[in-house]
Length: 341
Image 1 (cartoon, rainbow, N blue to C red):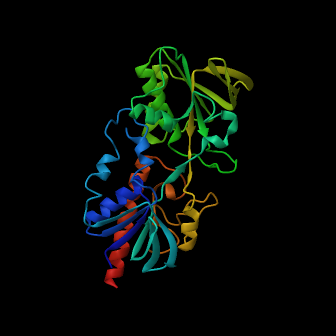
Image 2 (cartoon, rainbow, N blue to C red):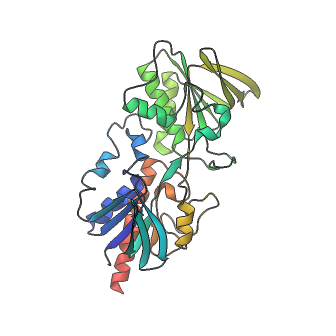
Image 3 (cartoon, rainbow, N blue to C red):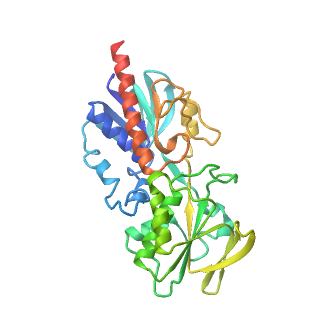
């Protein structure tokens, strides 16, 4: 029992925590609500928003993990009941209609995030206007080599902060961290592969985290255009998409036609993240993320840690990896202290 950890979630932070714990001889039960590991993380196949980072960032953390005898992997599973919310913790887990109880001496909440549903912003026309995609649709097209670009494509517009930094119901009032870098990376990729296409990014503020600032500079050198503007609506007129926007620098209204409009959708908390936290006695933020009471991964309940986009807000992949490792080390320290007693 002293070497048992329950991890809730199946994205990159959870995988990093699991690998580190197993390396220290800790057995791990990983409860993944999805049918596969890293469902969202697979949308960052080239590494988070880093044009020079070519390796598959997810593969290195999946390699050998699923077959490890110290990992009890439960895909398509949920925590359906908290039986005991203090050390040693006891929960009820439901997987494919079968329910079982599980006891763990420490818990890591690493549920990740959900992608904001762009259909909620009806004026952008996602799902019913041809040519309006999200950055994740575009990433999948890159991966499948089915990029919707041809000789007729003259201009592509990226709209940043879709579902982030908004007070609209169901959105995320905070910055989602990855979207600017992710979008600039995609814009730069398009510009390098299709130099004749005009690529425009409409932004509220550019927030390229840490070392990703170079992406912004590279994109400008490559000819990507940046317009500080707020898009009010997108409409189709004959063969073009017409983007109506406010130029917030010029303080004027304007329109810009495009062949493709890419919506940089942000992230929101997993739908039951706050319920899980509440039932464990863990505090959560007004925005429904798990609250970190002592940086970087400590929650208000001893023995329960949180990492990645489950806590305090959506994070990019490097941040999730760092916090996944920190959560594993915090859990190991907690177990060591309990063993000494």
